[in-house]
Length: 494
Image 1 (spheres, helix red, strand yellow):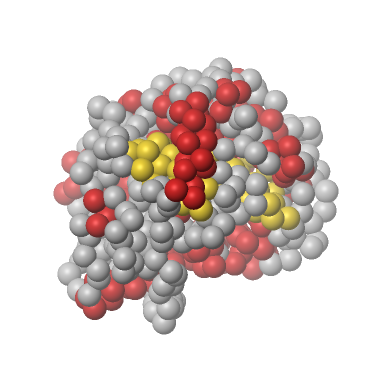
Image 2: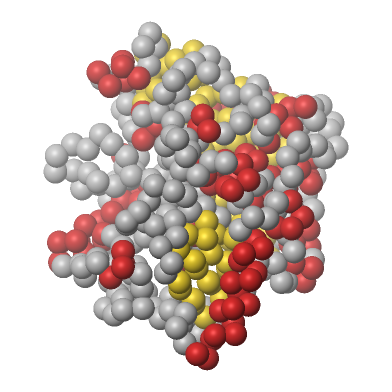
């Protein structure tokens, strides 16, 4: 292992051990500022089920704060979802409707009017580490997006390499590893030893906390890990060849983990589903084995994230800042693992794709609480603005999760809009959908409809869109969806 990786691992190991007692022994923060620091940790393609692989996150964030058990990625795809975090808006309002041009990608987003800009203008120190909206760096890899005072962003396409990747570190290109693709993506970059991407992100976060805390100026730190997203390069014969790559110390940690097979896994009867599902064959033994292995590799890759969150918590505790830091843990979208005959991926409207974890701890957040009120990634910017007093220059579509956690009854009837973008047909036809406490109603651009009564069918095995029994429900939801699909600001929160 390279020296940089060894040093990073040593520091992470120490602070993870320290984090074990951080919760119960936490003292009030000794900070000179009255507004909270904000730390956002985002994973990539993580399901809610895979929170089982993150015991430290559940303990250090969930038990110390509030877990939102029905939280949604309103556009379940990387770039639109991350743009929603940065703007507090649905995709139809911020305009990023895909991962690539012309409908989406980093350059589709107006970076001059985003959350880090608002926080910087409100007096916050701002820093980002890791992945940014897809396509970042392809035109000008040395660009630092507006609002970020410290920047360590992964340069596409090397973002998706757990080893051998390139970062833009405050305008200087640095490669960690060496190959021809790195040289092409980051010409003239400084070379550093090969290291595991997740550990490097953790070490940079710890360095930032050590420099910024304690301070009279509060800070906003964004850390975006790649795990458990699939990533290359893929050496022939490697166990995790097609999936996420765990850190070397975690390889095989879940080699015996059983693949969850909920109702709807490798679904037998899909006559109720749209044509793009009906065309999918059921899995045979080879595909089942591939899904199983990928599931294990994805869980193993999350172990470095779990250690990283624990290390950050311990570092904040050691600096006397934990009690005055709002800590948010989430993912950009979910992922399929065999449900409804879908071998992998996201985008589609079903629960494994649109449900994502959301755990928040810090000042004003109820402790050891779980709430089933509907929430979504549209709410994250509203939450941070509420906590910090920053002034947004966009009409925010979400609500503050701080307020939802304290008084969930106030948000009992709010609906969540789910949407996708152009360019996905025929495998992913564009849709809009409404998610209520009980129902999910979907309208596809093809004219196809789906309706699920989630109280009686939480695994979405039987669409009742043609049932006379649900005709009145379908009409009512269609009217509500019509209003919601073009909503902006307050009209999205009703």
